[in-house]
Image 1 (tube, one colour):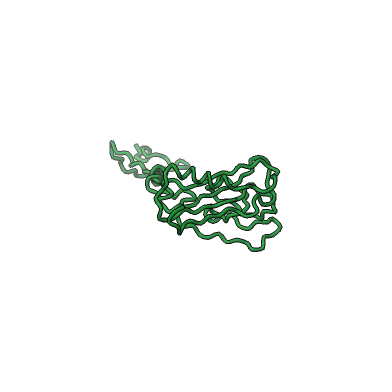
Image 2 (cartoon, rainbow, N blue to C red; image 1 turned 30 degrees about the vertical axis):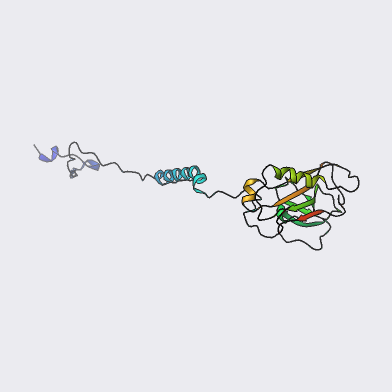
Length: 213
């Protein structure tokens, strides 16, 4: 027997060499490739954001209340020559509103407002102010009565085209301790608008340097 007959035939019937394949170890599988956990940094950022939102009200310093007399406020500049809109100053704090000023954009007697020329349409006017002595103790329940008496004595001039009430703003025990001594009398239109001044001269009493008011 020809030994070549036992060899595998290659292309064309010719016998060729048999390629060598190394034996594969039994029981060993190729190690799986681990994908990078890209979601871990995103998850950490999300958790951090939630913690900031939850803890911010506890960590942030409390904001001072609007109109707090103990909080220094920058002086709002006034336009000495208002344009066609008649606007003298915007966002004027109550303490910087002057007796006789006419107001728009009013959201309350303790909120900032826009000062306009009284010849323009407006919603309110500061018709009176009284400043109490700085060294006097808080008068307690008598504070409200005294403030209402002062504002109630102010006579409004003419007949306005709108229903007007005089709203009274006075110190509380808390604001008094912070230095507030201001009583304001604000005439507010509740139906329609105002044109022109409601007083010939605004009422103003400055007792800040007096021993008794």
